[in-house]
Picture 1 (tube, rainbow over the protein chains, first blue to last red):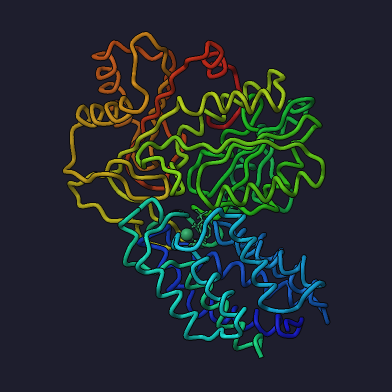
Picture 2 (cartoon, rainbow over the protein chains, first blue to last red):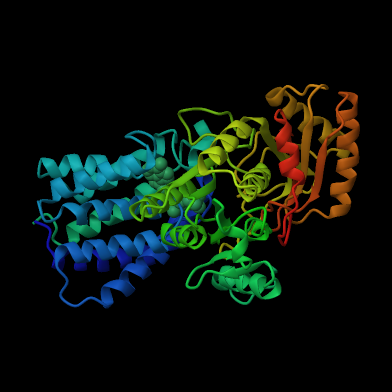
Length: 194
Length: 331
Ligand SMILES: Nc1ncnc2c1ncn2[C@@H]1O[C@H](COP(=O)(O)OP(=O)(O)OP(=O)(O)O)[C@@H](O)[C@H]1O
Ligand SMILES: [Mg+2]
């Protein structure tokens, strides 16, 4: 069950992973994008951190919505609306259900709708979709998420900036898939699936 | 990296400050944002608002085209990164005078999604919003299975067209129809001599040897379609015109508008040399442009290179729209 405490912990862990890997994420974005993914995510997570600092004892909906708005207003690029939409969908639905499998599924649907991409297009969806499937069978693990992110290396990009390269995008990890890997790893570390 | 800046992270807000302070007669900042709006508010009364924007680093696009007869507001994102929906939404609100707002968006996944979210927000406020997604760069093949073609310098001609129509009182629907009709007739192709350096990255987006050029490079250093040894201006004109010819099927009986656009580090001297060769090249095809502009309109920071945009003026009115007077910093 997702709680406000878990989300708070989750975001702190995600923030520190993004700070550590900021340069690496931008580096991944250089050969197949425009080299800004790490900077974009860092700006966003700084925004999340700052807005969460101002909340005292928020309920689940408030904290999810605050995360969503900070990401939407700070990240920019493609990642901002996608991550923002994901958290907004969770915020909208968290009064009906707090089950991770259900909330992440709704978030994934939001990402798909916003960006028009689907599984296999070499985007963050290639981490989100297997992660949601694993949550549904209670089998989410760090290994599965890592494998999903690593799997984007062999894909041909069909959406986002990397799609301009077509076949030449093969052999590179998708930066958004890797930042999503950190997101799910942080969720597990925060006790989200216990 | 050698740049006249204070700190890489402050480039965008400081640039907007400089721009609005230097040209208060044209633009002012929308408080709390990196967006600018016309200073001449009464020029927007009773007119459809036109909002554009995108990542920074393309100056004078987009704030340089804000003013009576062209854009109502422009939103600046981080360098080469789409602006965020909350800022776009503020711009939409600032220019809506009751007849709705039209958005001119360049076709990048980031821009499309952020502008989409902003229109969703505006619709909740009952502000009618319509938009055009400009994809004039013919370097990439168009395909349903990719992001599709990018929006580049031809976007400025789109700004001019819809801005003039809005100033003459066109409705939101009429502007949408105009934009949709004109879009397939605008084609752009670029050639790069060197890449741009994003301040926060500190090194060029790609490497080209001293004697190398690349055709089809995008305005954020996206890869092009071919690398070669440097050519003469005359040969470049030939290559770019024939590439566009394959797309637009140039026809001596049509009227054309031409935009020769510098990418940031290419001097006007070279742009005029190229223009001379371009006009010769067009003359061999019996084409004499009905309208022409040469200069820096949609740049890519300090990239060296040029782009050529050809706009097939199949509708009588389009030339009038291009010639319609504006009050902007940079048109
Ligand atoms: N349509 C899409 N659907 C899902 N994910 C997408 C889509 N487009 C891009 N992405 C994801 O976003 C990541 C890139 O995010 P980033 O922050 O670098 O934005 P960007 O594409 O550079 O935006 P901008 O062009 O405005 O700079 C990709 O690695 C990919 O995972
Ligand atoms: Mg990027």
